[in-house]
Length: 473
Ligand SMILES: Nc1ncnc2c1ncn2[C@@H]1O[C@H](COP(=O)(O)OP(=O)(O)OP(=O)(O)O)[C@@H](O)[C@H]1O
Ligand SMILES: [Mg+2]
Image (cartoon, rainbow, N blue to C red; front, top):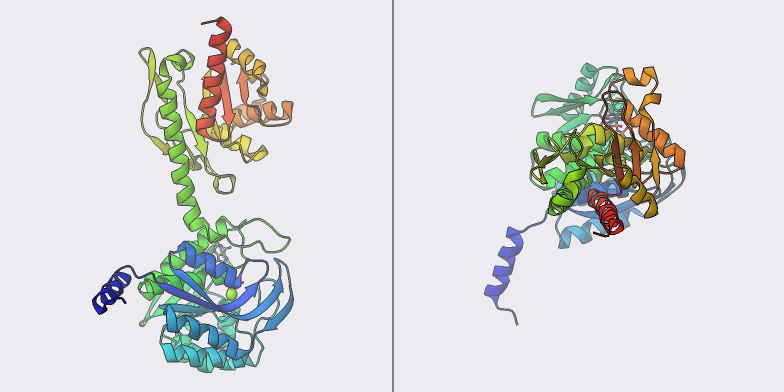
């Protein structure tokens, strides 16, 4: 028997640690790009517990919807009730609702529990397939939108709901205001994914005011599931107790990242990547830690390595995983490089991103050929190092800086990628070691490549140990 007091205590503890609960009331996209899949990934990334009421099962991929099977409306409300009666729902979003019977059932159930509701008035899939029966638009307008906290139509949906032809941000404002004032929603965001222009602009109307959210339009991104992730992100933030304005602001940043770092798969519109929101910070942490560990290892063997520190000093760098590594800012290294110090070495600054140019460019080039090879270090050119690496069975390659074409010389930062590409193509894979013998005013150099920074240092230590043993020291 648990005493009443203990129960109360447990209740308090549970309350103090309450994990927000969000729900998605939507369809299943078998391709995992949109619908429930996108919503759950979004909920997880934003730190809320995600729950589900499936409305419809679709056989779908990135380019077409092959079949749709709607669930019986009572099955939809039973799912909502089961969750609301136990875990409680702080906020929910609706996605594909398919028909008016489901819309009526959802509206009835939501009213009973009174949680915050984001209505994404999904009508057509990104591939063009209809996801809502035309006659259901009336139910959407008359019974669901009036109980919505936020409505998130895209351009076409906003036009259908309001009759306003949307060609500009001003038109979007008129439509957003109408959804609130004429249809009775608490607020509305008219999304600009389908508008023209250099910016993707969303217009929020809440409490009599407009707020415009604009980001540069991403041209090479992935857009399957943008609307789903956006509305799910708003629901997640509302579940945490954020204001409508703040929730939309977070959702905009969230979806932008998910589009930019989308999963480039499938033949149609590739799926957004809602995990980018947590993945990128996590990978940045892992990468920094690895370079720090590599630096510690280098310093531990400082006296052995110091003789190989070049005139331009040394560095050890590591890039984010290939899907997130785009520029020099995505490569971590030692700020100011690792310098010779007496008979040992010391770092000039701390480990950070965007502090290396030469080695970082070498790594970004290597990753184009082998995404697993994310790290490199440099040491002074010494023929004994090259020979030792060969004897150890490492793959060794080189390039000749005196063969660098004029037009490569003229382009800022082009020399190293040019050379590394030659060295890679020479052996048909990313080598363990690439050297060049220098040119006028250019110091000869060795780069050691590896999957991570610690491994790069380990390769160097292995070479040095072998050299020592050969000399019989
Ligand atoms: N190319 C892009 N670059 C930047 N942001 C974009 C791009 N395309 C869409 N967005 C943003 O994504 C969010 C969703 O907008 P969109 O208009 O694509 O919704 P949707 O048509 O409902 O999407 P879905 O087809 O997934 O249902 C908005 O915040 C919009 O501004
Ligand atoms: Mg949509």
